[in-house]
Amino acid sequence: MRRIAVVTPHFPSPMAPTDGRHSYETLRVLSKTYKVHVFYPRPAYSEFWKPGNLKKLCSDKFQVPGVSVSYHDYRAIPLLSRPFNGAVAAASVLRDVRAFDPDLILSFSLYPGGYAALQVGRELAVPVVAVAVGSDVHNIPDPFTRMHTRDVLRKLDFLVTVSEDLRRRALTLGARAEASRTVRGGCDLSVFRPRDRTEARNRLGIETGTEAVLYVGRLDARKGLRELVHAASLLQPTRSQLHVYVVGDGPDRPLIEKSIRTYGACAFVHLVHGCSFQEVSNWLAAADVFTLPSYMEGCPNTVMEALACGRPVVATSVGGIPEILNEQCGLLIPPRDSHALAEALRSALERDWNSAAISSHWSRNWAVSAKDLGSTLESVMRENNL
Image (tube, rainbow, N blue to C red; front, side, top):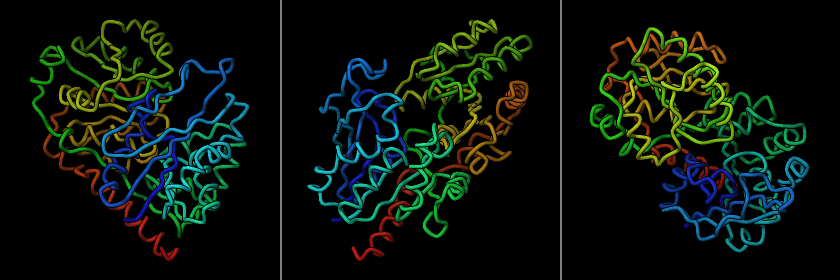
C-alpha cells in the first residue's frame, strides 16, 4: 500500500475541532486506499507571546475518526517569526515523516504547511503535491509570506486548487499551468440532504411563520457579516417575521455584536455558537435561505452543503462560488454591498424555489472528490517512478 504523509495545519485540532473539514473528509476517504498519516505542525508560543486562542498546547490524545494524525509543536513568536515558520515547521516534523517513509507528501495550504512539506520532500527526495484551499492564495498577509508562497507554487510537483478562480490566481503567482488542476470538494450526502423544515424548526425552537436566513461559518468580518446585519435591518421594517441566524465562532464576534447593537438588530439577528455537522444540517433544513456575503472565497463547503439540502443560496460573486451556483439555485451579488444583499434576500424569500431541483444541482460527495485527487496523486507518483 502506498504511503502518503500529509504535512498541514489545515486539519481538525483540539483547539479547533471543526477546522480543516475539506482535508479531513478527503483524507478519510483516501485512507481506505493509501496508508495516510497527518503530521500537523502547530506553533507553540512562549507564555509572554502567547495569543489568547492558544493559551495551552493541545493534547496529543485528540484524534479524529478514520485518519491517523500526530501534532508537532514548533516555537514561534506572533508576526515576528512568520517568515521562518515554514522552515521551523519542516524541522519539527522531518524526523517522524522520515520514519513514516512516504511515497508522496501532500499538503493542504501553501504557507507555512506547503512550504514545510516542500522542504521535507526535498530532504527525503519524494514528490510533493499541495492543495490550495482559498485564504492561502487570496489572503497573503505580508511580503515574506508572498515570497514563500510564490516559491512553493513554482517548485511543487503538482498543485491542486478547489476552484478554477483559485487556479487562475495561483498561476499569476507562479504556479505552472501544466502541473495544476482544479478538484472541487464535496459534502456528506448522508448528512446534508433535503429534510422536513417543520420538524427541523421544532427541534431548534423556530416558529413556523419565521422567514429564516442562515449563515454558517467563521465569525470573520471578511465574511460580510456586518453587511448582513445591515441588510437585515433594512429588510426588517417591512418583514416583521424575518430572523437571521449566524451560526459559528471566531475572532470578530465583538465586531458583529457591535454591528447588531448599532443597527438595533438584537431582536432579529441571533448569534449561535458553532456546532457539529449534524446540527448544521438541522439549521439548513430549518432555513428558508442560506447566505454567504463573503469578500473572498475558494470553493466554500457551506454553499455546497446548503445546495445539497435543497436550500437556495444568496452569495457574493467571488472565488469559486459562481462556478457552483446558478439562477436555478441561488442569487449572486457583489461583495461589500448591504443594499444589494438586502434586495437579493428579499427576492429569495419571495421566490418559490424547487428544493429537489436545487439538491440535484449539487450532488458531489467526498468519495468523488477524493477519487479525483487520488488520480492526481497516482499520476505524480508514476511520473516519479514510484
